[in-house]
Image (cartoon, helix red, strand yellow):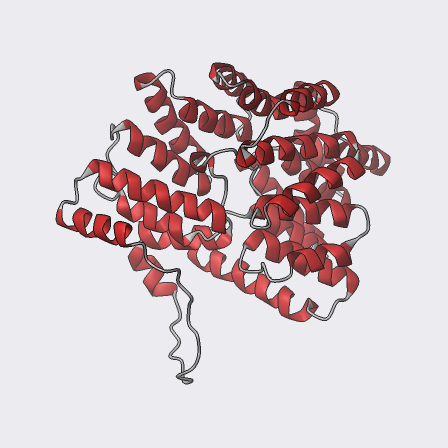
Length: 397
């Protein structure tokens, strides 16, 4: 699960389904070759449910079809689709946003608004170098672009460029946004207590602005988890989901804490009905497996199918979830460790460090956690779960 971000344009990874959808736009011939078709036999079968079409959007799309280089229309439509992808966790909207920007997609020096949107989509594909390049171009052209700096802070943090992330956070004028941007960086630097106190104080003065509050409170929950304060994290995440039941990131994070505290059945109930989202499906499959719930067989097979479909196309966007599934459902420790290693080569968030250490211990290969040891020493990070796995690693040695 990618880190939650404040705004539309700082969208994180979208999961296996997102990888497949966007790959279909990027390489339609390959997608067609590997897609199995099915002809429904029941005339009453519902194939898909689509929302009502906005007349203004329909008109805008017709105008864009007539003038494919109408930049303002294209940017507006693509931005709206990215917003839909964020709010619904439906990655098809990201593919549609990419298609809307087709006239500029392969242009290195595209207009700044396109660069920013393109970076968001590339980030969702875990193409972090390309996303970073686009963001650097935007900032060179618009040094005070807060959205570009916020998104660059996200990409830089995931890839371990903490100096660049801090530099971008420092540009953000809003105190709460800046504090929320800096909070995970301070946590990684070994100052989770101070980061939590500072962000909580900054957030205390915020009235309204549900999106900002949700983002900041998610950061507080993550710091609480890092400190081992699972009850505090639960309180934050329960408040987030209660305010916004459509918050897919908050719901998945809440499920993680429930499972961490031995409440897998509650986690499964929380995620029921959200299985179209990959991050929810993998967690519910794990929760049902742990509790031997009634939906275990169905959900485990659903997750296997999604992983197989991604592998068939050569797309491995959700490596973190694949590794968790291999470890916690299949008990295939060797595969879990291989996948966790592959994941660590792409992104280096705290969850990725925990996973590599955990799978190294489970596979009986403590030396496989050496990169995490080096990273933890370099950053100064302390984390309740990571520290536990590293202690077990030392015991195994």
